[in-house]
Length: 232
Image (cartoon, rainbow, N blue to C red; front, side, top):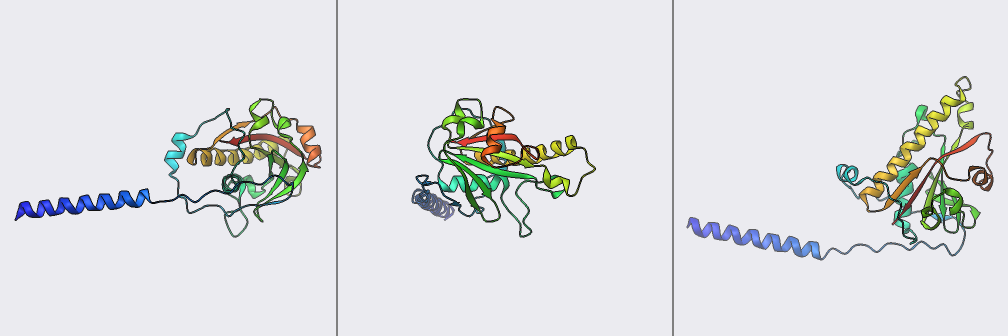
């Protein structure tokens, strides 16, 4: 009788394993949305995929810098998620996925795509068309930025500090702002590591005066301390 029960238990285990394997084999990944850049207009982003619980330790293990990118455009899902990871709204009070010293949030995120520059309107989860044209070459001095599908600009508005912290030295405020931008760039690194995309951060090489002119921003109050390339 004991042998019979052991054999029966083994049979149930085998059936269970086969059923699980069949279920896994039958899982169909939802096709991703091709990003249409044939027209230069505002891009409505998708809601962040917060149900996808990627393990943090695996992302940390896989976190690395890449400088070899395909020219393939990002899928809309990937573009939406990476921008939300960088600086999206994650609470009803409007606070972001990245911390900000003294909760000033002086950083604005711009996406440089193959057809132009867009402002990331995080509260409305939308990319607002700013400047039409391929400006990737002025976002960095290395060849890979020319063809990569996304270059993120972290633009700091120092004017947001002036209203509240006029007594703080400007150099100190710039350091705080760069820290804020760095938090966002690390979020992007971890998201890319978790979902098999490539990225690299850089603190120079971009044509800052030309970029600020294209963005119609005052050079006296705005700086671009960091840019980050993302792609496949």
